[in-house]
Amino acid sequence: MGYVLLKKLDQDKLTAVVEYVASNFSKRSRYDPDMAAKLSGVDKNIVGDLLSAVALTVGSVFDIDVSKEDFFNYAPKGLILDEVKPVVGEIIDAALERKESLNQDFEQAKSANAVLPSYRFIEHAIDVRLNFAADGSIVRKVPLAVFYLATDSEDQVWFQTSEADLDDLISKLNKARDDMRSACSAIGGWK
Image (cartoon, rainbow, N blue to C red; front, side, top):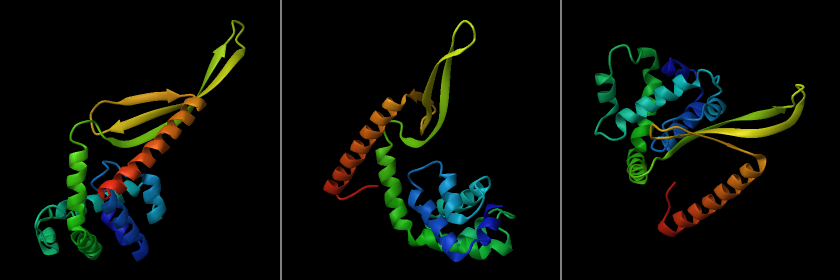
């Protein structure tokens, strides 16, 4: 279904989606469905099929010596319908054009991820905790931000913050980003 969705995109949206996947290919195991939906105009609930098709195609050609013809010859029968071969060919061409940079990004990400678990994505929800008096009336309302932090390890990280803790976390993340940009500039860059 992903390839069929890709076939329906206009050229600008197709280019944007392929660029999004290619530029994040080595860094993420999960793409942001909101961003992909915005770039493609495809409903958020099915945009994952579109992303999977692009990632499968890019992943099939970026690190081996393969041509577009090889890809089509060795793809399992029924995976790529004749009607979508032109759009799949465009994705392969884009991946092959970026092959060197994709390989460099992948090797850098592999080095960066070699020791400790690495960030993949974060999700949040807002919760409100209520405390009740003996008579059932509400005596306290406490809003909290609840987070799920996904890494490339199997461990799960859940945590909650008050608004003040969240402000502190954001401040420290902004400082870390500034420090990281300085370090990247000093060593010649890394994303």
